Amino acid sequence: MAVQGPDLASEDWEAFTEQEKENLESVTDSDSQDSENMVENQIRSSCKKKRSEGLTTSEKPVLANLKSPRNDIVRVQSLKRAESQNQRSTPLKNTNSFPRIENEKDIGLADGYRYELSGSFKPHTEIVRCIKFLNRSKRFFSSGSNDGTVAVYDLELQKVILCFRAHKAGLTDVSWSSNNKFLLTSSLIERSIKIWNYETKKKASSVTFGSGVTAACYNPVRSNHFACGDLEGHLYWYNSQTLERKEIYRDYSIFENNSDFIAPVSALAYGVKSITKQQRKMCWLFAGNASGRLEAFKYLQKKEQYKHLKHVSQKHSITHIVFSERHQAVIINSSGDNLKMYSVPQLELVRVFFHPQRTIPIRCCIDPDSKIVITGSEDGQFRIFDIDGGVLLNSIQAASNSGSAICGVDFSPEGVIVSASSDGEVRVWVTHSDT
Image 1 (cartoon, rainbow, N blue to C red):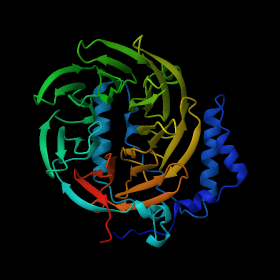
Image 2: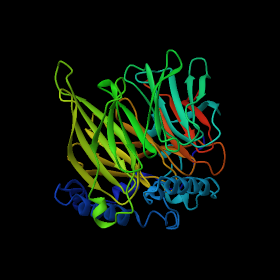
Image 3: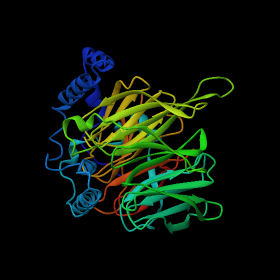
Image 4: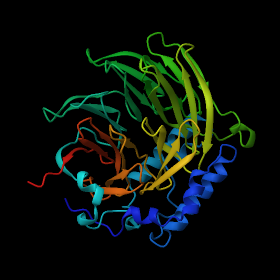
């Protein structure tokens, strides 16, 4: 597969001096925001000679448009206008300023990360919000679209085995329970969460909120618990059987400066780490919002409570969060043209990976061995980075239509990649064969 571009990301990272690397590792708890800004400025300064100017300042993140007055109708209309403008926008410019592979001979470590198209599907009519393999599954994966539909795919049969309308519109998240028996879907427009029994293919229960639901995910250590966030900045957890609800957190300090504007929850993820030979697990919940604030909570299993540990703020809206157990760190997508990696639970900035993202909510994934991170991009590619070295291993042109973005990717335990684009297409990628 032909992969184009003028630059390799490793050159950018090799530009760091030893002092800059020390500064990167010296982000402290007391001044994390200032330190992070300093590190990010150093990174961009070191890469300035190798990278041309990025996207124009007039391109605003979609999630930033969620910071709107409390009137729900105004917020929803603002979001719909932003998405409509985004769908009509022209293809991104200056994408050559982001790292790509110019010559396959220069790939090096990327020799094992070359992929070719295996199949494609088009069950959706609008942007695909999320794409995810079922827990521990090598065969089945699902996708959810802004048009309200959810699709389930079978890789062996190479077809869509289930496609249904979960919501009228505005689907924001899809999550599977740890035993894969239940599927959770959330909607911004309907202000609701619905739980579907996958075996019976029927709705098991639903919950209605006072404002639009922006993110939701199942607890991996409690199959009947899930967390969710809304436009008002509330973060809740629910018991899906009893529908008992408790508030986990809300940043009330936002009202001190301006009572008319709030930051919606924009991304949620759990992280689990085995800490004993008996496989006792430590569980964290991470939440990101449209103002760029990342929160970390510890889940106390016996008490069924969440303890707030720490937060860190950065400049751009957070659109996705993934956890790496091997690195004990989280990697976030943000609308500032980068992925950022933070240690857990300190939330200290560890590494930054550059890729184009400004106006579309992009998602990333980590391979089962936690060696690489793959992210979608607004230029229609997905990029594969080495987590330990911060090196770009490969970039694949994954969107079939010019101007379409790759909104999300996921990795199967056997190394198959699935990608989802802003035009509703889902594609399957397998390891490239030279024979």
